[in-house]
Amino acid sequence: MVSCSLRSSLLGSLLLVGALLALLAGVVSPARVGVAAQEATPSPELLADVGEDGRLTGCVDPSFPPMEYYEDQDAETPIGFDVDLVTEIGRRLGIEVDLVATEFTGLLPGLEAGRCDIIASGIYLTAERLQTFAAQPYFDSSVVLLTLADNEEIASPQDLSGKTIAVQSGTNYINIMDALNEELRAAGEDEVNVQTYPRQTDAIQQLIVGRADATITQDTEAAFRETAQPGQFTIAYTYPDPETFGIYYRPDATGLGAALASTVEAMRDDGTLAALATTWNLPQAGADFSMPDFSATPVATPAS
Amino acid sequence: MQFDWAIFQDALISEAFARGAALTIGVAAAAQAAAAVLGLGIALLRQAPFAPLRWFAAVYVWLFRAVPTLLQLLFVWNALPQLVPSLRDPWFTPFLAAFLTLAVNESAYMAEIIRAGLASVDKGQTLAGKTLGLRGDQVFRLIVLPQTIRVIIPSTGNEFITLLKLTALASVISLRELLTVTSQTVAVSFRFAELYGAATVWYLAIVSVFMVLQSRLEERYRWTSRERTTQGGRTVAPALGAANR
Image 1: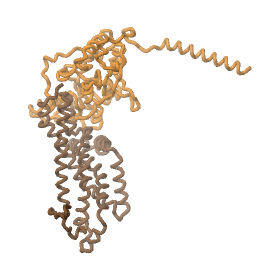
Image 2: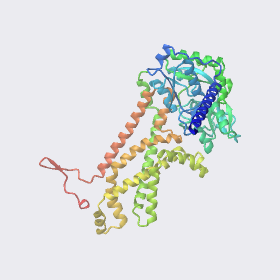
Image 3: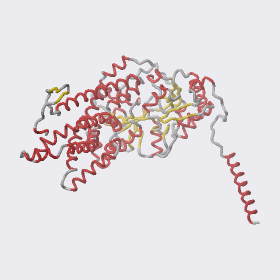
Image 4: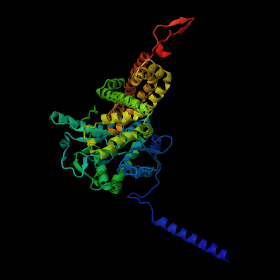
């Protein structure tokens, strides 16, 4: 009968597809760098520090590619170096991770208020922040001046005198610009016209619009711009003394702090961090992070 | 962290906060004044005998009420320079851009408020004015406009208070008004409660002063005599003049 043979050929096809899928699943396994995938169990100290939901809540401001950003306007979850970092940390600690998108100026208030357990959002370690929060360093990064590719006038911060610079508000870059303006004022030169914008992407937009002559940002951002829009921007100047990105957490969360320290250091030692850097076009040298010595640097005065 | 009164007080009287507040008030007051004048013009155009003028006014009100204020600010700051390159230069400051955008945006709302105010003045007033021998523009200036103003003062007050807070949107075009300064100071020192508290006190102070000014203005436009006669426990205003019949 026709139906009999149809049924058996259908069954045969299904078996074949099933076998192929099983084969593929065995071959295409998710890439794991370095450490063999182990199901770790979170320590009681760690669980005590992440609140009643038993999940690690990480807050990010997804407007800082390649650390964290939305791939396109339809994307619902952010991607990036920090996203991968926090996911890997969660996997190694055996704890589920929730990522919450928050605006930059609301990140550290959110940590203090308990809405977030950790902040891994391309924020670097400063003496003032460490007075209020604890942090685990994870990546070194330099501050750079970014200009349009055809720039020939700006080769050092002093060249910014009399020009306009766009900066993300609430960042340490404003302190750097204020210090530069004090220097210029003392030398009797024109000050830099500093314009502050809510997001780094807004500041870069002012470069494109032509209103700003430069923006000040991390080499991470510059590297990403080079990938996304090759040839449009150039790094005009790299500041010496790289800063270090840190995962911020509340100082009383000692269990969480210990867990972060051991995990991040393991990731550095087994090459996971360097590999993650390469994935995101970041300089591999940054993976060799170090905890900055703040006893040597004077505490920067808040922008007035 | 304990609430630190010293930090709160320092922020309250700090130069940064004062400058931010001055910018907020400056932009809002300038924009409101310009909006009132523009809005009056548009409201009168809505009644113009020449049809294309009426259409222009209708489209103006429709356009600037429909597009969100934030989008208008971003458009003026980022998109217009592509059409008019000189808008990139430092002379086009965030203050100027915010003033122009907020003035035009607000004028659409003011046009509707003033239109309602004009409609509330009885047609008999205009007729009476003409009977007294006044010219059209005199009738408007001396009789209709003052009565319109009296009616629209509360609504305009509302709009101004809203505008004061709307200036915070101008942070996207790098205007460092009060709320932006607060956020930036918080980002450096993390004393959220103290700094947000100081900003709140500033806003309360500004709006309170304005509310007192508004009630003084309403008093000025209330044309009843200050003396009152009491009749059997009820307070009654004395007979009003001919203009108010």
